Length: 119
Image (cartoon, rainbow, N blue to C red; front, side):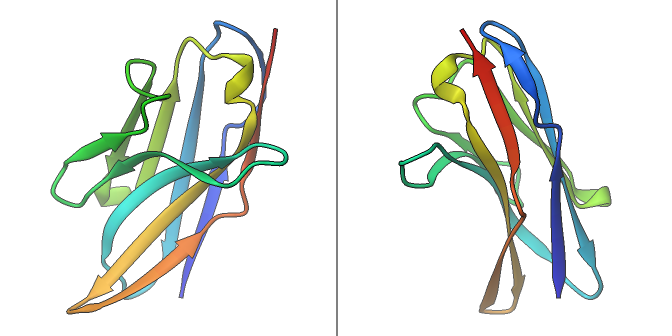
């Protein structure tokens, strides 16, 4: 079993920056993909950025040029640096962790951290 805990959400003014952190903990697991998703009120959860085990990253169009995902594999942590924040970035941000054992994969989610961007 893997526990996933996010932190770093806050209230920030438009144009500001935030750094979200996510810690995966447990025993006997190997992390494959780590990612950040977000869900705004009344909207579906959407992908923000992914970080594959091999180092490849991928971003939603809305995040390109403003957000940066990074991971510390030794610590089982992933980060999301968010710059030039906009009111439309307001959402609950969720950390996603996928672990793998051979061909078997397991998905884990954190409880979410609130990001509010004021105009």
